[in-house]
Image (cartoon, rainbow, N blue to C red; front, side, top):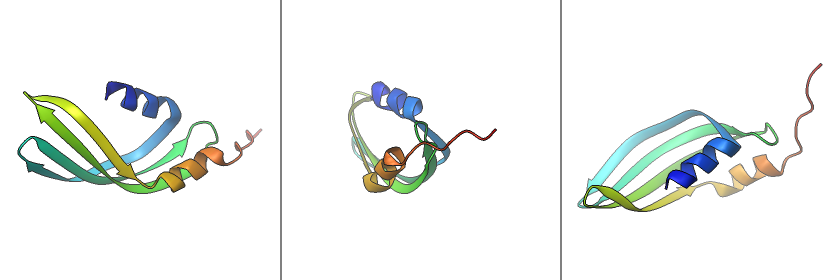
Length: 86
């Protein structure tokens, strides 16, 4: 899971990253939220709602899933990079 967040930081700028609700049932925690961001490679923006599902055992995360608008995010990476302003 650490690698996921490292890769996210290396490729995206998120502002804001907004968890809005936490739902807990036993060893499962679901977090709902949204983010806006920008692909670092193209500087193109994206916006998406998301849910993250964490499964825990003995206080440690054993499984992680994210559900988000991958088409919107993918389009921001596929867009040509913006030219630098001079």
